[in-house]
Image 1: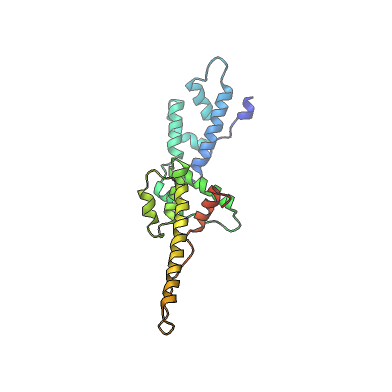
Image 2: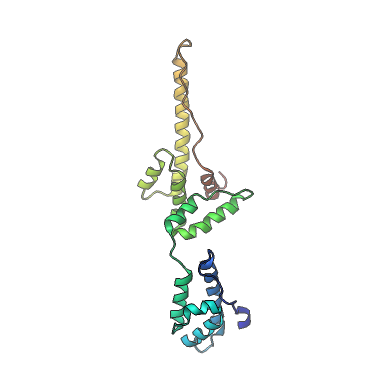
Length: 216
């Protein structure tokens, strides 16, 4: 059975952009391999794990762990080498500014947002959605501050409230302009109509709406 779990050698460059992803995948396959080598009576000892580890890393990677005395210390060195601390601020910026690519469907776009969110230390999906909405509504009048003040309401509710509120405001402005025009003499200078735009939801928010409420 162990031959089916035999991992490739770890050869990833620690400085590459995909280093962490490659190491995490390799480490999972290596742990599966160790599990397949475990006897029914007892687990592998630390020295046995260390010997197997050396066999499944390249010579360049071995240089980093050559002075390690135990399997645990060697793995710790590799984790520190490959998994760098995430710059959460930058990761959130990348998430908030990620635009839909040409020929990218909404489902594909949403999946990419989920992958980017993994780098943002987001604890829950609810908080993740709130992060996206906060980032993409900074120019919406008062909406960002309103969201920040809320403690117990859910984002699902606030999305709908925001959409309804913006529609109501737009409709109220339109009615007010019509009243002024009706009461103004035809000889007087016509009142300049305030510019009314549709609710200022960017495409990212529309995608989130479709994800949360497919029937919308």
